[in-house]
Amino acid sequence: MTFGAEFVALTLPPMVIAVLAALGCAAPGNFLLLRGQSMLGDAMSHVVLPGIVAAFLLTGSAAQPIMLAGALAAATLSSLMIEAIRRTTNADPGAAMGVTFTAMFAAGVLLLETSGAGAVHLDVEHALYGNLEGLIWLDATGWASLADPAALATLPPELPALALATTLILVTLALVWRPLTIATFDEGFAATSGIPTRWLSAGLTGLTALAAVAAFSAVGSILTIAMLICPPATARLLTDSLPRQMTLSLLIAAAAAALGTIAAGYLPLALGVSFSVSAAGSIATLSGLFLALAATFGPRRHRRSAAA
Amino acid sequence: MVSPTPIPMPETALTITGLTVAYGSVPVVATVSARFPKGSMTAVIGPNGAGKSTLLKAALGLIPAVTGDVRAFGQPVAKAMPRIAYVPQRAAVDWEFPARVIDVVQMGLYRKTGLLRRMTPGLKAQAMACLTRLGMQDFADRQIGALSGGQQQRVFLARALAQEADLMILDEPFAGVDAATESTIISVLHGLRSEGKTVIAVHHDLSTVPAYFDRVLLMNRRVIAEGATQSTFRRTLVAEAYGNTLLTAIPA
Image (cartoon, rainbow over all chains, first blue to last red; front, side):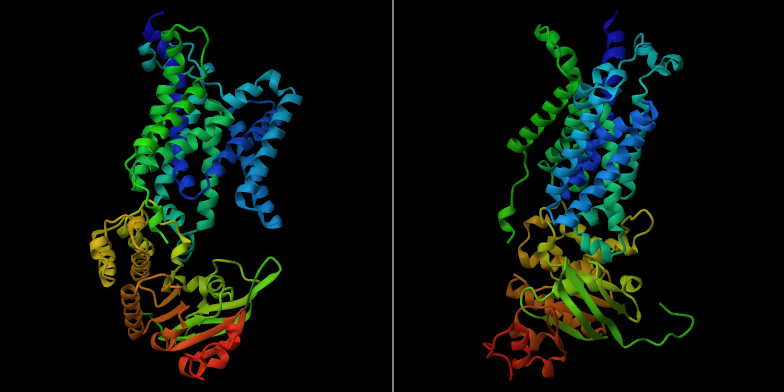
């Protein structure tokens, strides 16, 4: 097998999938970050697990649309739970989210272990750490396969599904950019300016759930938060303009995903060590590294003390 | 806008009838009724925790009311919202938000933008003109986090001017601003009043009430008194709202 054939079959599909998931997560992550709702991303990435397991147990199918429906149902249920806990106990939103997502996630893990789902298709390790390495393109014979319809038909089904989800997320955000920006900056003013702030808020939660589901297959539950929040947080340290922050976050997300996948695939070999490294782990580590670099060398001055 | 059939113009800009707001089971605003005549400038005054901000937010539908009816220009307030500009407390937003001064002012033009919400050159010029009215034209490209408190308040007022509303509702527009900003803001607000616009502001500095406002709404969870400043801003009534009598600066 030539390098090209090996790369196209084994590294390219996971890399493209990781990049798509990273883009789909980073885009809504920018708004979560500015709204002080980073926890919501964490919550969404955890609650999709019981949704996916329950959908699998109910239908016996692991098809993408069914998984997605289960995950969105779980996300909706947890949004309602968070709201109910907040209203009945007057708890801090962060506390309500913390209670909800740990309970939902634990329920998901229990469901996964006690039911037969683990043996058939899903298992705890994949749910937690993702399964990027498994998303390979067996029929690819080299770069020429990219132009071969017969070979393209055997691409991992996660790839077109993710492409669709990420496109949907990016297009939706582009369409609601102005009202969402205004509602994020000043919700009270936005509501009196004819902006449907509740719908936007619910829509952002929905997009976050979609992004979490999209990323679930790539990096797993735990590391989704790295894709949702790290690139926007890094970009936030590099600029004071929201459009530039969005662009930078997408570039950083794509770079972390692509370089992380490649590093996991080739670095241990190049260093001559025998064990393999998780691609999801590499991506998250790289995202953290980018954030640390931006925090250390970023140009954005801190003027928090100026505000009275 | 010219209406094909003549509609009698109601005299009142905002009418609040029996408005009650509660946080949990604790009522913070209890059956408040108040009228704000067109072309008037009213100070909403009362001690901390009197429910002044809550009253305005509930009147605008930003927080739910238990009971009550609010009408603006004779219509339900939600319907009349395009004619109302709301200036929240400066502290209500995160000034570290990645935006420039002009970006915030342009938010006031939201209703005037089309389907894709693009800024036309005409709208951009309009935002700039509003900023100029507050003497902030040189700060258009400044990061909002780099502004002083007074400058931030001017930006908020410029954004409200861009809305070209008939009723402006301000929550503590003079809180923590310098004297120069205070005089700029009050001259803009008096300018609005002379154009026939209505202004309602939560106000804290009792010493400036007679000079700035022609009407007052004195409240402490309920309405203590409402009316022209000269007859309503009296020591006994203010003392009733604030619960003490150490108010020698106020006419008896």
